[in-house]
Image (tube, rainbow, N blue to C red; front, side, top):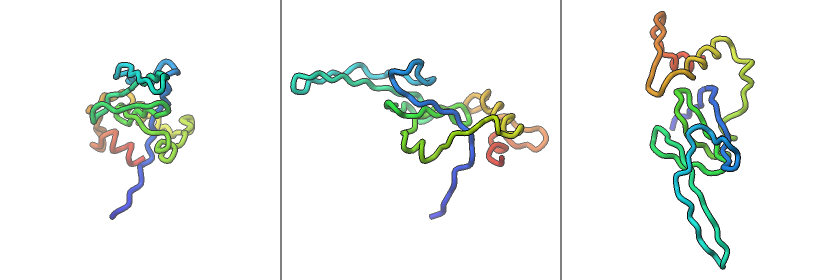
Length: 129
């Protein structure tokens, strides 16, 4: 099987904890409270979710909410986030990287910007950077 490496793309992410307000953009409480009594002790559970390109994604405390390069949102478990991402000092990005990031932040999902000179999309240019 062929091996692949993730391309170096700068993303935005916020860690979710129900007690820390405001919650990351898009996170909502979806399920009503579920109370269960075990040995006379009541426990209440809550469920949170976020709308993703694949449908409703479950969010649990400690998950990271990632904003992808096209503005899409999705949850990521802390161990996967730690193994996949590292903090980036955006002040050290090149002017070209900052420009591409600026354009990507303003695109709506499904929108594309094409360079009139080379004919490449902003996504293609970002992948080459």
